[in-house]
Length: 195
Image 1 (cartoon, one colour):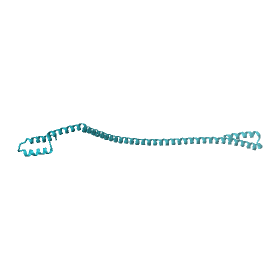
Image 2 (cartoon, one colour):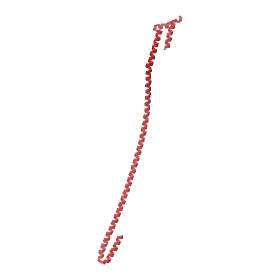
Image 3 (tube, rainbow, N blue to C red):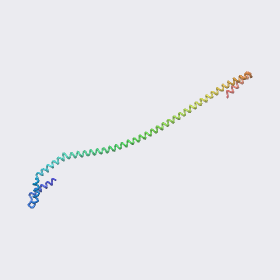
Image 4 (tube, rainbow, N blue to C red):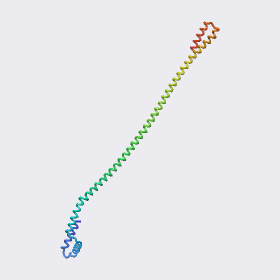
């Protein structure tokens, strides 16, 4: 733009010094510059002032603002990246938690199955021990009954032998002599004891 203005100023300066052939064209440009009040030194001063203001604004206003915008965009980008990383970590953690939960459920099922198996084995063992104890008690009771039976039979034999001897003595006391009665009693007693 500066070069265009310089060309325009040069053209206006050359127009004033141009020949008469160009007079009509030059007079149009001169007329325009005079009507609008365009002066080359003023235009150059304005261009220089504008350039200085533009440079200062660029250096102290636009550049820091652009740097701040860049910094904010970087922060936003890093924040978005961090958010994506956190989403990925969260998803990984959720998957890990689900895997741990499934593993814990499997272990719990195994523990329950083992406990049930142990409980059943314990109950079976207790039942078998109870059966063994019951059989032992029944065996002891049968032995006691058998001993009691033998004892009662022995007592009954003794009592029967005594009764037989007594009855025989009474019967024989009347008919047999004393010596024969004693012999007969001894023989009967021996026979009854052996039975």
